[in-house]
Every structure is written in structure tokens, then in C-alpha cells.
Image 1: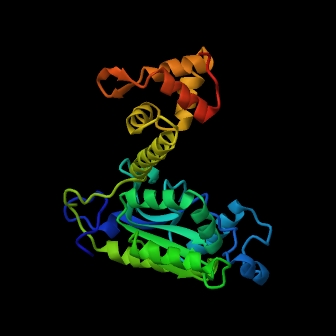
Image 2: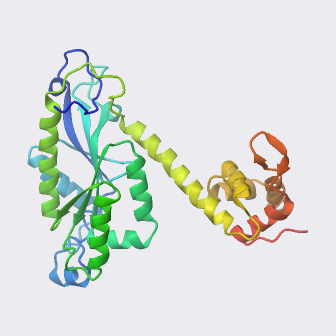
Length: 314
């Protein structure tokens, strides 16, 4: 095994393959029912998977069964980021019973799967940038981006090709290409076999700093990072309000990291409606611990009116 692999808890001399199974973890919101995505070309070819009328859950069950029938160990559940990862699952829990999700340790590989259509759609929205950001910040060192479908045949082929190049050259992701769902499942199988071989011979003890995170740890990291990312976007939004500079935007976002938190805590939580909410905003200090310089009433009213189109009494 490679010496830089992060490992789940192992006692001195304990062998990974004696204690853990390598399990493919599929996000249970994964859209196997969607087509491979080639714009109008793919639509006319009938290569999409959604024409059968099966629902998303039924497709997930069908493809999960295909993977388990091939000899893989597969679990479905909510994944904080990405569409698939691989976990080390303890064969018997520390209490002696069946292992639970608390016994799942995230191995060093994670993947985002997108049809070409979905890739193009996500580029046009904020999803693409946010997903890449969260994958980079997830703490999982090896990120793969699996593009499913014929990029060359897509109406927006150049956009898709450029994205594939940037994913590799700029973002540092490994880009995988498959022709459709069948190829994707084969890739999942091959990767799982490779990872099983990679980890099987590893032995404890695990050196300091080389411990795997749990699925719960991953969820915490991604949740915190998602809040930070949204806060940064909110700051930019605030600074687009005439008269609101960086210092005021930082102060507001420090107290209310998202527009929704501002609405629910300042607006909905204020008995006096917009006036009371603006009153609360105006007393927010511009710097932590320094209370003589605050946002002020004029800027507080500007923010409330700009974000929520509410007018306060002067």
C-alpha cells in the first residue's frame, strides 16, 4: 500500500483487510434516471435512461443491485458532497454488533458524476462553482469528476470541452469520461476493486495526522464550508447596495451569514416588523468588541429596503 494513504483506526499490527471492507457509498439522491446528455443529438438517439418511466428511487435500486451482483459492497445514503465516495466499514462494530454509519471512514477518493447536459446546466447556474469549491475544501485529497455522455455531440460541445480541460488543469481534479450509465457502472466497479487492493495490505498503527475522517466529520466540514461560501457571496451582494462598503458588509455578514438568517432573525424575530429589524441592524458594531462605531440607521434602512423591499417609517 502507498505510504501516504489515510487510514481508519487500526491497532499495531492489525491488517486493514482483517478489520474493514472497502464499500462504495452512493448518494441516495443520485439521478440515475436522467439521460447521458448530448443535447438534441442525445435526445434523438434514445440513449437517455428516463424514457422507461421508472422513478429515481427505482433506478437507484436497480443500479445498486447491478453493482452488488457483481460482488461489490454498496451502501446508499446522504453524502454531504459529491455523488460517490468509498468508505472503510468495520466488519463488526466496537460494541460487537453490526456496523453502523458511525463506523464508516471516508477513504481518500471522492467523485462527482454529471451527464453532459447536467454539466452544461450547472455551469449556467451557481451550482458548478459551489460544488467544485466544496469538493476542494472537503478534506478528501483525490477528487474525480466523471462526465457521462458524448461531449463532442452536444450542442454546447465547446463549453463542455473547456470545462473538462479546466477541471483537470485549473482545479486539479481527475477527469473520467464514460459513454453512458453502463460505462459509469463499469468504472465504479473497476475503481472499487483497485481501491480494495490498494488498502487491503495496510497495517496499524496509523501515524498521527493520517487518520481518515468519518462520514459525520465530512458532513461537518462541508456544512461549515458551505456557510462560509454563502457568507462570502452575501458580502458581495451587500456591497452592491449604494453606500454600503466592505466594513459594513463584513459586520452584517458576521452577525447574519445569509440573507435567510437576516430575514428570520432580524425581520421575523422583530415584533415591530421592518422598523424594529432596522433598529437591530443599526447597532451592529463595525468591528468585534468595538461598540462605539456601528452600522447606523441610514445604512440599516438601505439594506432592509434593498434586500427585502420593505420601507421603514422615518
